[in-house]
Image 1 (cartoon, rainbow, N blue to C red):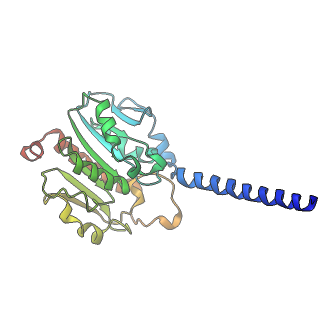
Image 2 (cartoon, one colour):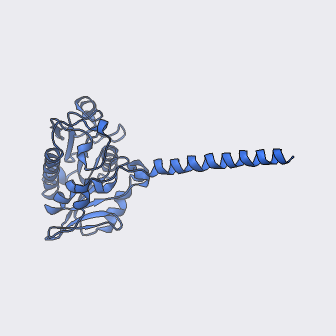
Length: 258
């Protein structure tokens, strides 16, 4: 009898141990985010041009002006929002409020409407643009589709809209930026979805750019496909995104009538 009791106890302990290990690994998987590189951490420091805060969202605010145009940015899947600081801080330095929400389990589809809260928190912002990287870009396009009266510009980085986010009948200013060495967002996949965006969408094809250099975060060596430097790719991304925000801040007939 004692032997059977010990056997049952060992079996129960083994089951509990397996459940604990699986639970631990499941939590690690669900909460994992690619951590920022050192240059991204450095870009999180406030300076005389941009004030950086992280409560309740990662926010970059111009120090030398009072912005009336804001840019909401949705991070890519399983990427720490801080990994975009080297791109978003220069955008703020140009005079725009930039807000980056942290998504549940680091996936934008689980809180695609967080922009509602951000917009409500900044009533002084006159016009809003939204954008995102990878799945964050897809969710940003979906938000723009559902909030046409609110969003005045859309920046899609290394991504494209989903089939249920058809913006082709709008006059919304859109920029879609992708790299030629991106296995996912490339000439083929982007061209297949042109019908979902306005006819005058600005497509930016970065020769030698890849998917992950749209941020500054850690990746596996096998995920690096770019043949140009990270700085060169990111300078182009910032430049093209600023062009979109300039159009949003100085609306013509197209942006004024959605």
